[in-house]
Every structure is written in C-alpha cells, then in structure tokens.
Image (cartoon, rainbow, N blue to C red; front, side):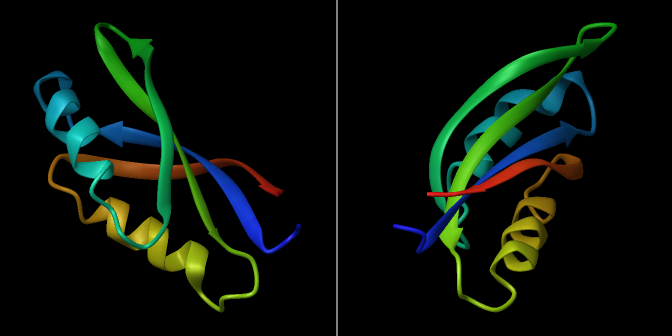
Length: 87
C-alpha cells in the first residue's frame, strides 16, 4: 500500500474533430498505467476527456513524464491534473 499514486487528468482536445483520436491516443501512453477514461461535455459541442492513470509514488519525475507524454499526443491542446491520491 502506498507505492502507487492514482492521477486523474482533464485532457482538452484542440477541437471537436480530434476527440476520438485523442481518446485513443492517451490509452497508448506508457509513462503511467492507463486505468479508465470518460468523455465529458465542456461547451458548444466540445468535450474533454477525464483519464485516470497510476504512477509509481517514489519515482522522481513520474507525474511530469506522464503529463509531457499526454501533451505530445496528436490533437491534445492542454492537460490539467484534477486529483491525485495514494493507493
């Protein structure tokens, strides 16, 4: 217990047309272990993706690596940490 951190992220796509590709792309991220995701309405037909990943608690720079890899997914405009908790 306490060796992993659950990270919930809000992933913002560049536009309406990118949501499907972004949703698929974040599932391929290797800097963390993908757990779950769902699409949520944002505004004017635009959706964001809430995604949950686990990362190692004691690994230096693990969260930063996860955020950078998600930002590198084609079609991602921005990523925001919504919550973190020890497992």
